[in-house]
Length: 303
Ligand SMILES: [Zn+2]
Image 1 (cartoon, rainbow, N blue to C red):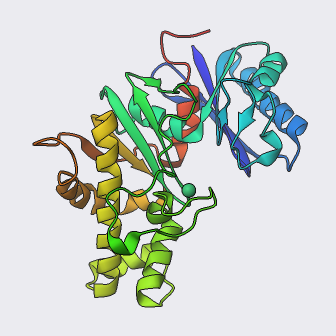
Image 2 (cartoon, helix red, strand yellow):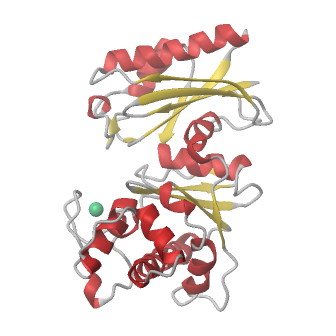
């Protein structure tokens, strides 16, 4: 059985073909047509038909993309590729490809990839959080994405930072219309803004981390604030979802000390005498989006 995963992003569309063991049979990437819904559909369909010709076999198709399909209307919403919003992308692809297509949010695909054969392999409940230019997350329960009644399960970046200190209130204004969202504390640009606010210096996140380990007190303080905020934001998740494993992805997940310092703190806010949840780094990195899309059709659930 071959499963195709497609990562449909604003700048590129990538396809991967996986076998039942998760081995990559093929991978290909093209630029996303600009502001053109019809051309985007045709690009996706061509990627699949070309791949099927190369492999000499038909496969299932899963798509990972920003945004979500409204359960009420089956139209995509919340995508940063705005030409896709309001479009029946799933049913249009199904008629082009002549088969059922599964589509999920890109953060859900990240969580699914890491849960199936990544850093969360073998865990019952996995919370996958992407800490990059933005903050998003997905929840996987026993190998299945938890979609939810409103198709927003795991959307956590625009909840407020929990247990804020006085100087964290009300927090920076967010594009979503509110202030103090988790994304405004935990994304890479947010750490840089926080550091600039505290020191008056503009420093890239990687540089802040490097200088902290070299003993720079200001950078150390910025990183310590970041760790406290991540610990609180994840403690809130643990209190509700109680995952076995939390997998971090995105650029900020490369900060190695998070994996010891954050679990050392989150017990202060988790309503339990001990916390056995593991905090781990991703295994598949940038490939998790496309691999997770392929795993929207798990072994034993083929079309
Ligand atoms: Zn927000």
